[in-house]
Amino acid sequence: LGRREEAISAYDRALAYKPGDPVLLYGRGNALSILKRYDEAIRDCEAVLARDILARPLVIGSWNQRQRFTKSFTTASSG
Image 1 (cartoon, one colour):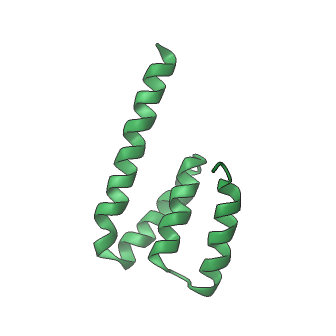
Image 2 (cartoon, one colour):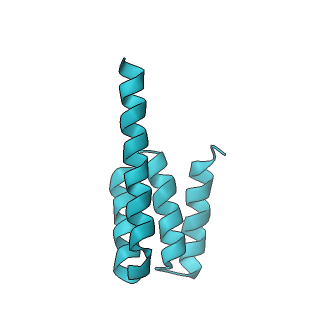
């Protein structure tokens, strides 16, 4: 928990051995998005979608869930 930078480094190392692996790209993209490194996260998620069409519901669902959470958190924080 809370060790996203370490997770990203681990995904980077794993991707060096298995370039383009959709599971690894998805995991790294998820960690990047939590750190608000959105451009990088989007790049990884687009790569997942390009390689594995069956991953589409997972990737889209994850992004939609994160957007809903962020929106509700922002609204609660400002009110």
